[in-house]
Length: 163
Length: 193
Image (cartoon, rainbow over all chains, first blue to last red; front, top):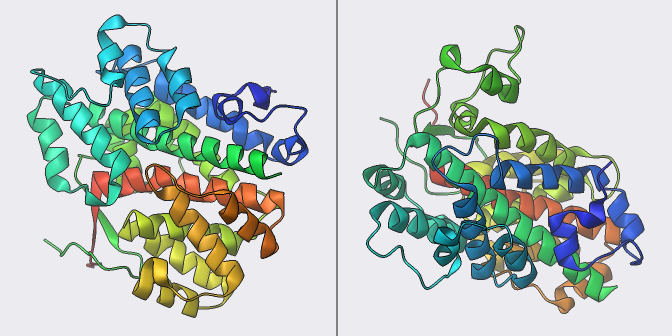
């Protein structure tokens, strides 16, 4: 069994095994374990396709920062490894003159900060920039997962602070 | 081509992908495993056939979704659906909102709450417990999320125990995931036969 207090979401929330909420959290240990498995599938899949581990970690760090979730941003930043991907985590960086990167960052930011505004043309823009359909789904799953994890972490921390 | 739906409804629409679904006959063993295709279950939606392009996350996602929405104990199933609706309304995911609003109505044996939410969004007049749950889900869905200690105290004041608050966080956050797939990778469309 995974130590749920060592999963990225719970660890970043600040809750530990000695916290009064530990017993409640343990009733959902299957969910915390599966959340970490989904984290690993989104960040370090066996078949990363056109999105490298470094890019995935840097995009995740960027999304955590867009959500002002510093501890998870630190977690993802430590996973970047590849120095070429580091600039992706900077929310002021727009991809520069790299067309593919510009499209990836634009879509990541839009789906993270203003999900409702995403329209068909935004998917077309990714295709036009040379992103394959497989990679569009990989990117979408990464964006979707990280935004879930960020909210789980923030929610857990607030529960911890309030109890 | 059928019309794209922009207004909330409790009639579950069709979903038209913006990314080409894989063909089941072309699926790799990994994809078939993630799709949970068995000889007796060969009906797979376009949505899942799109997600099969990333089989590794699809495989993890399905059991996690089921655990968050259906696990025993904690928040009632109807109120988990209300959390899912709050998030889906905030993100304007018409498809997810339809699925989970209709489930809420069935479980709660009520249509008024959803009618008010669809009509008035964040201003909907609900009873204190429903209102606390719905508003918490909406605040958690913002970027950045903006719920505070006061919101947590409101949940406690209307009677939610910590186990129920945890399930609300999970169901609401989960739809931050689901909406970012369903709403971005396809369009909800009118049902055609």
